[in-house]
Amino acid sequence: MIYVSNKAKEKVTSLLKDANLSGDEYFLRVSVVSGGCSGLSYKMDFDNEKKPMDQEFEDNGLKVVTDLKSFLYLVNTTLEFSEGLNGKGFYFNNPNASRSCGCGESFSV
Image (cartoon, rainbow, N blue to C red; front, side, top):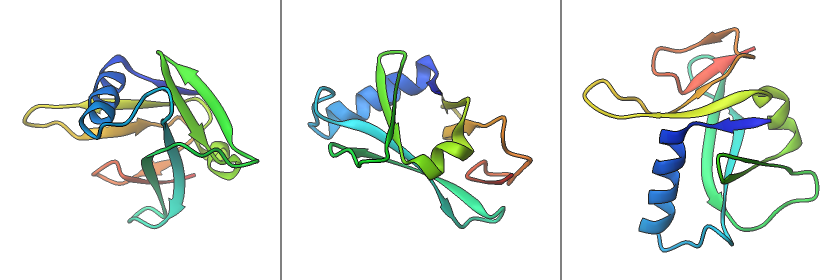
């Protein structure tokens, strides 16, 4: 399962609306890609096409889709959002990460 905090849901919903994308047609795609100072980085985008091996979840009223390989890194991860002077924007609270960089955008397992 991939979880979504209340603040992250509010921000994703707002971004969908700002981009004139329907929450019924589009979903949040999250993935893990090579790169970043710790070896792996998170990637997020809106998408409306599912692939054959995609894993689909719904939490807090938000549909989240990831590919099977990324899901292995993201099991039980929570998408969070923080704003304000010290806010990070979107970030992942990933219990599988053994190390993450200071900016929170990359990690290793």
